[in-house]
Length: 374
Image (cartoon, rainbow, N blue to C red; front, side):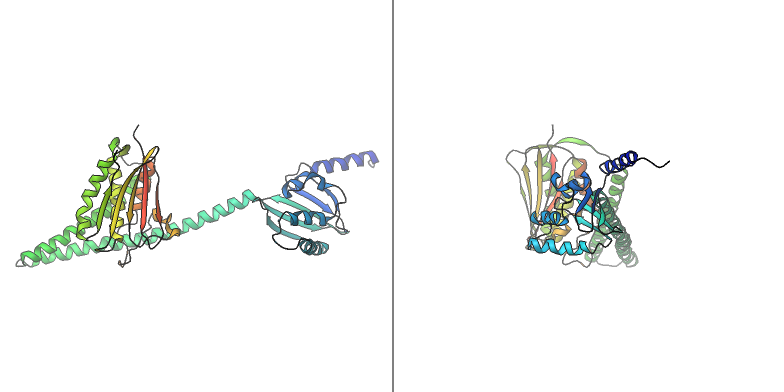
């Protein structure tokens, strides 16, 4: 038995009412480009006032509304409206993404109807686009990290072999030539000692990083005198700076704060930053200044040099694992490329922050903060 007119009307009302609950915006324009129907979501996604949803409203009114509020950018409003009316008149299937001024990304799909006009859906794909962009960025970063790790392994293989070869060569010379002069013997022993220290530093970096990554680093948080700790670290580095004739200056406040930190680990951070500054400082004209400042709830340490500086796009990268800065007079970077990454992990663990400020060629300033002792 065919449905009655009342049943058909009820069915149509149910379908039309259901459109209001769609997550997508929905609109139908007839062959004369006048609105047949739309749901509330269409008005919400496009930012149209409620009275724009009246049946029979020309499509041109919607285009004009967008143009007047600047959605289409600068230009003559009527020309912008006419251009879009011409395209809509073709009633061709289309699908594109549109970014609204508020940052919402809409996927617009239009399908022509048999008797003219078209039905269009509007989907908010902002979250999906953000997820896709984040996924792509993460993929790219993983690929870069993998490349950096490969380069790191090659570098470590080379840099471990180089000091070992040097140590072996000079040891063999000392062993084979019993009559070698005392001055030359002293020089060769000095080289062997220097290369051994270099190996120790590289292995310590690797071991420290492995411990931090595995969460097995031993920490001894204590109440420390920030000024005394800085003074001790700077004093230990003074001979190395003097040998290269690089000026090293320490500025301390009149009232030194007490901080909560691990003495050995924090000293490691300061020594690492000073070593980097020394590496990039010009011989005879280099200057490095260490400053301690008292902030509201934390102490701030700055290591300032007059080296070549670091490009803005490298400011975050230098703290990543296996990344190395190359000094202008070096054929290849010295070290493992883990020093600053370890510094960041240590400072983070102590509840502080570390960053770099630099505008080449005016040197670089590495800063980090440590909370005051309670």
